[in-house]
Image (cartoon, rainbow over all chains, first blue to last red; front, side):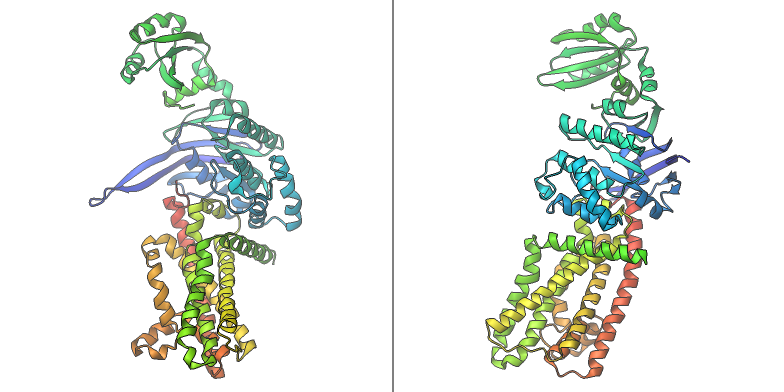
Length: 325
Length: 263
């Protein structure tokens, strides 16, 4: 039996627009997705903001009803059998909310231990252990409002491990963390996987998915556009090269001209202080450089590098240049 | 049996959590202690010519105003507050039913509101020098327990209603003073026009006020006290039954409409 089985899952949000003449607007957040997660697997759901990752996690954690399709978690239906699912899973949603800020970390953990039906004598041992595991030991008596974002995130992880769940949903756990905090949290996730826990991780950081996940589903506009191992995803761009160009103040219309060139597959722009990095995926490799530079004539261009594609480039190709790494 | 003990632990944990949270909230401290104190001072001042006999009536009545206000504003907002702080999704996702968690929160709220009665008692005794004696201490204690049960249960009804109907929640302020008057907290309802009496009979706070006034000031017959207790229990059972339905409807609606979180 798979830990997670998702079949043709769909979620539509309905909202009203207008004041006098109110109209119902439908937004398809998750559009007919299917995937399975094996027990003990660390499965990644990778996609840009608004792709439907959090909506998927909320449906799998019984917090949201699907509009269509089915989903089973540990063999139980997420709509009809939410009661047996809840004690067996843990979940965190990225961000700082969801904790009682005016209370200490220990108070927060003691409270959630009671709500997860953890026996008091077990909680007494587990809380100090989890605080140490999350490097919050010595700070447990302090109010959460004084914690940094990274500390709050780690407290969330401690909270979700209180009842030792067999399946974890980690929705963008490293979002907003500094590089060191994010690296530490990724190590915690690796440690959890080594304990044979099943983990569904959502992220929009390609390197994070690459470093942690055994399989990745790339989700864009609510649809899964690719599902493979990180190596398998990289094969999507094996026939391409990436040309990185340093430019200064590139106008959007030039980007459209670039995208229309035969030698160009995808274009993304990253802001780097005063300049921008233009990442052009091209099947032509260095031979395409003159044509690209001709399109950029009149603009100040700095360094030009031609390199092999990475998972990030595969992701950019899959999401059609919408990524914001 | 196992379920009962884990639920009892969850109720106590929620009550403790709520107590720690609310006691650092200025609005709560005002509603529970300062406002009833002002009402007690005004009541005792106005009634000073009637002597000390009436003081216990004012003490109990002003305490009830604190109880009602905190029920309306704190218990009524208990789920909405969790939603605003972003903890509602986490609470809905735990194995303990949300109704059990809110019961614990309401219990803390009602018990700490009882503090306003104690403050009024001390005020009447120390500042105004009234000799305060409770006529029937044992019966008064039972009345207090039944009042706590009725108010906690009522909190379970209004919290989901306020979540599902923000328009109703806007009436919170408007519901505060009419109940002070209609439930006879500070003066007997016999002073009100006759047509308001049936409305009073439909309010659990009226029966709470009856039970507490009759047992503290004395003068009530055994039948009157028993009727008040019976009505408090009757209303409590109705509230608990209705709240179970309301919680089910509210959670189903929230999971369909995606309103557990605010994003």
